[in-house]
Length: 254
Length: 186
Image 1 (cartoon, chains in turn brown, blue):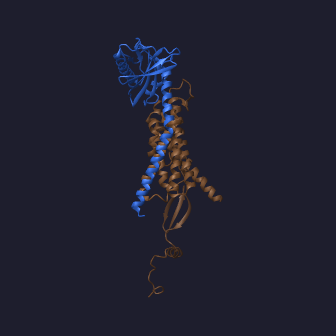
Image 2 (spheres, chains in turn brown, blue; image 1 turned 135 degrees about the vertical axis):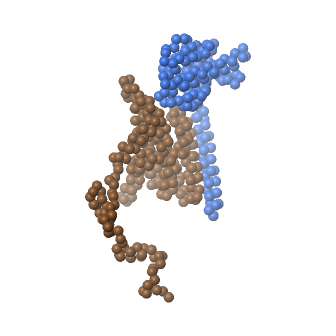
Image 3 (cartoon, one colour; image 1 turned 90 degrees about the vertical axis):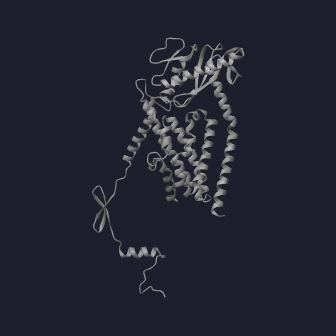
């Protein structure tokens, strides 16, 4: 049970950092650029997307064996679009101010690649609980990313954070941070910084004649023979019983 | 069931369920959304007509105006919605005029898609405050980089001339429309 719990938890934290949809997988770039001009906008968009992610993961995972694979994309789109519309009406009714600010970007959640991407690569192939955890992790990771970008753009572009004025009048806001150019700059620099620090050390395989040596920073970590030993050949043959055994005097069947 | 009929059945079923769910959500939120819109309208009218405590809707010749009524039920100005093309999208405003249609009493931006930090400054008090007690005759004029000198002049926002110009043009056009409609019957 311990291992399973660990696995489920790591599915959830995957979306927060290791496979962050915005900074590592580069999914959902449109809202990441367009709606991150303030911290509040970024957070609201992230939360709306998280709702749609979880709801669609629920439906897609529970029905994954019923949806024929030929029509799976059409089916996913119907499910996702329905939930986005529900979210849109929910915002209009109960959070009219946020609905006004997010405006035309809520319907665009339908084409957010994070949702369709996770549906296709995870929810449609996994059980309910892991799918829900993955959706929650990805959604929160997306929200975190958008809020982070939003905070940076809002501080530099308007001197405030969550609409609370932070920097005094001495600060001349960099208006460009509120414009598309600033979005690209912020996102690009953040992706660069985050990936530089989390890059794993590269392992390089070098040909040494009969062997391949795996090296990390000029030190050989391991070697491996280029050719299969006879035991390995036998074992490989046994694994594939259907493969025709070469006809020899011993196994000729009449 | 072969693949083709399975596809048809599954998608049709999904369509039905989705349509049903959306119809239900629409019905459930309809009243609340209407209420929100009405409250936004009321709020906007009372912002532009500061003396009004109540309002009366008047429809004439395709124009809708809201006559503000103060606590004694006496007319306290006219408010109406002005709409038009801005720099990046439609600008919608609530305009308050005095009862003689000679001066603007207040301006409130309802919808705009202008550039944040630039054209979006039309929503700020600094810009809108210029329109209080602004004369609309012969028409509103905007000036750039200088302080307004005439009673019908306002200063455009620096680096947001197109948005400022759009606001002025929309106001001039719609105020004329309201004037024409209301003065026709008299």
